[in-house]
Length: 126
Image 1 (cartoon, rainbow, N blue to C red):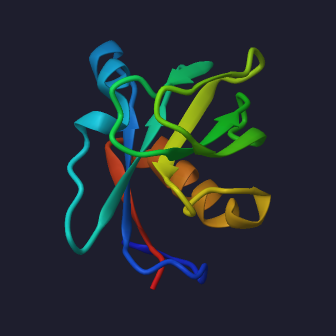
Image 2: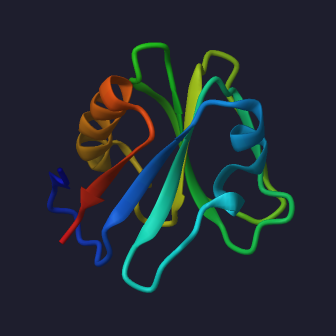
């Protein structure tokens, strides 16, 4: 069941939970991106991300143990590294999908759903 939201974004987003070592290691690069949808990754546990080998910038959000945002890092460039020692997990999303706190409400709902079901969840932005 998609979670309806109203940000000015044009494509639905699939949020995938990456909770194993290999899924976290591969991160966003391992996710398929479609012409009619895009993908984001929830890395947990995680406190740091790197953009080595990436083809594009990403929005990054560090979360505490209750999935509350600690730090937003919009448009982290290729080759960039970000760290938050207090973080327990990280969201990696395409640029403009998670730039700041005003965009976090649909993500919070998706994280709650993922904690119950695991795997992935659709966020429908349109």
